[in-house]
Image (cartoon, rainbow, N blue to C red; front, side):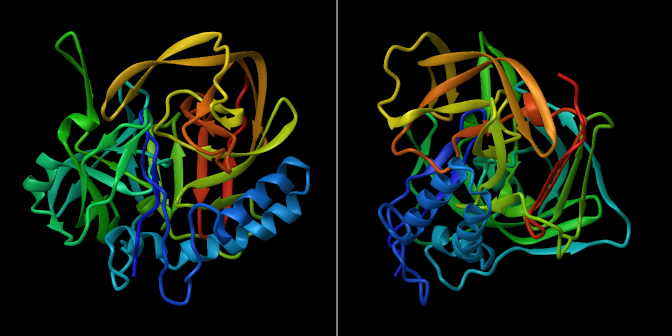
Length: 358
């Protein structure tokens, strides 16, 4: 019996299905909190922080294995028989134009159930998302069962339900893709009556993680190819349906979330929940439920490194953890990833970036 679900949907205003507990078939380990999965994640973080990259890789590989079996989709649907999405490639290259929305999120044109839509490309979104109006327009098939509990980055609840769609981009099709359905205002923003951005949906990691994703921001192209296997060395793991990679901040090793749905990179303040003592600055943080000012500490002249790229960032915010300390202590947003080109290959465990100058 599935008792709860877990998924992360970070955007510029990330949403998260509240982590509780889950048991499925032979993988009947309690996944949240204090369970075997959390212990493995905590140990992996400790080893990575201590410089034991090999030990962290070994622990993460074991955690990621359950993700590869489509466990997350079945948990979210409350149905152990829910099939994972099927990916079909056409003979030609699966290449599509890549644009950037006003909030910094890359966007592509696609079709859902044969209907044209505009989607944000959000590697930090654990599940793909569509709006309620889009769900009606494309006749998305709703999934029965309890609705997932979704929280935005501000800790506020957001209404959502689950559905299944067929999503297509030039040269590639995702058949039977699980998506979250949210209200239209959750994927849009207006200021003084002016619409800053409005998405029909988000192309999340449960779709992107099935392919080798090549994002060429200079040329304005996204190319999807079959995953490569095997690969020499692994520097990307899919944990909790999130792409985590090896990184370093001012020379200190850490694990980072690759989030093309975030305009700015940021750090989790040391100490976990409640670690927001004496904030130095404030930021207006937008969530799916609205926006509010959040206290942050700002570090100056920070060197961030990942996948061979080293950037000297003038400022980098430290935000308090919403609850417990997560495995990843950093988020690599578009100010780091969105230069030159990036490659993410979940099947191969590869994260690559073209060189970029500070």
